[in-house]
Length: 414
Image (tube, rainbow, N blue to C red; front, top):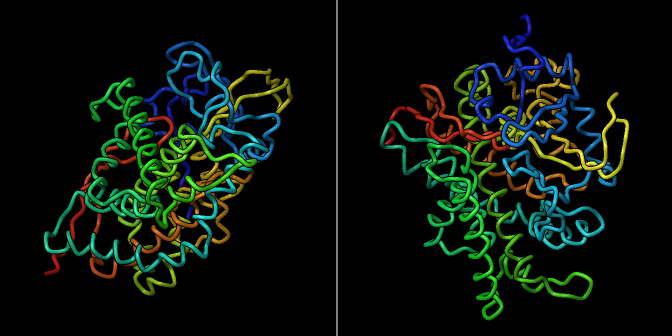
């Protein structure tokens, strides 16, 4: 079989990965492939403010940037967004994702205890029970809105339980999280200002929950943060709020996207689902890895250059912005044979969905892997003929590879 090679009518000079509407095109894979071939480190003008950035699209280059935190810093924001300065004047965020070592190392160690393989193993039965209940809830209907009824619910409920959010507040947290992630999508119905306000409200909720845990500690992550110390000092409310927002966002929205893209992939490659169904438990971990590569829920992360440096044949200056496009790294032909084929037997599968190494490798990777594996085990055991129908409705974003709506059909089970 000849491997599929995507194409695009765009010239290299016409490709601008900052433009939000670019990510709604049908030829995104072709455009990224052209960049990898012809201009793997490309300068893009920012569409709103004219302050440009470097786009990096090859796996090896992204991996090299990820481990060199001395040259490529997180401290000045991690997004190619519509802020005219793109974070140029606001270093020192209270969010761990916008810290560099050694500060980042200290804070990461605090919360990493909540995401060890052992701890995730202890809650696997809980994850499975949540997944089974969600599948059972739609099974009699014969169809469902897969994103809102299944894909979004499982990771949201699991991370809320881990953090300590009461079940009656789950829908409220889901609303705030969706608004903060959909700030540049007109259909979501929020302006950038409203999206920012939702993010602040999410942070404020975390601060209020922390205050309650100071009085009534429990066995959850928010209590762990309240009782933790860094260099002999307790975390501030601002720091706890930042942790809370990151945990809720990273722990729900990204896995939601992976699960949604996973159903699309199994529907487009039915032979892979047939293979999965031969032994769901055996294939589930491999399928989770390929779903993560295929979906790449985070399209990019950004770094800021701290000193003048020659990298990949270009001269980068202090203060330059550098975007690492993980979605392109996960289609890099030099790393993944036949990268446009969804293949649950792919081995090795060194995908960059959690990053490509370095200190910012995704903290919740163990949790995400188990949620995806368990969800598809339970889904296909009860609804083996479920498939996505129609085209998925994509989120208008250059950072989050989200699906807003996805209709699914199956034989009802009563």
